Image (tube, rainbow, N blue to C red; front, side, top):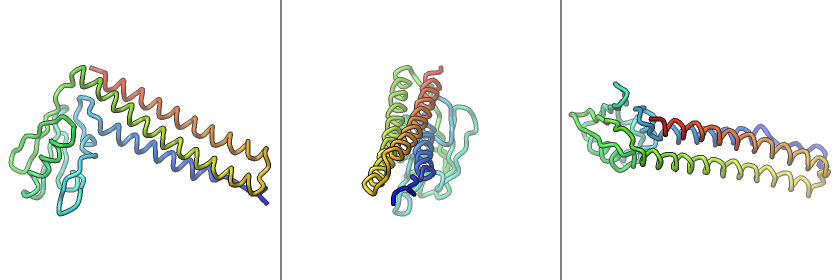
Length: 187
C-alpha cells in the first residue's frame, strides 16, 4: 500500500530555497557602509492607506558610494517617506531638497559594526529555524506514511534524504552569514 510512497523532495527543496532567498533579502537590507538601493527594501511608507515599499512612491538612485537619493513622485508623500526612513532603524538621517530626499550614508563605527553582525546572526538563525521547520514537515510526512505501511528501510532512506537536504541548506546559511559578517566588519 505505502510501497509507492515518494516524498516530494522537490517541494521541500523549493521551500528551503525560499528561506535562503528571504535571508539574502534581509542581508541586503543590512548597511555595510556602502550605499545601495536594496537597503531601503524593508522600509514601508504609509501611502494612500496601506504600507507601501519606498520604490513604489519614488525613484531610488545611488549617485555616489555614500549617498542614496529618493525622488518622490507625489509632493504630499515626501514627509511620510522621510518619517518612515527615520523610524526604520537604519541609522540614516534624511535631508530634504524639494521632492528629493538625500540619504548620506555615514561611516560605520566599530560598535555599530558589531551590532550589525549580531543582527545578521539573528537573520541567519531565523532562516535556520525555517529550514528545520521544513525538515520537521518532511519527517512528519514520512511518519504518516510509516503508519500507512511504509517499510522501515524506506522510512530510513527518506529520513536520510530529508536530513541531507537540511544539512546542505544549513551549511549554505552558515556560509552566507560568515561572508556577510566579514563584509560588515571590513573597514
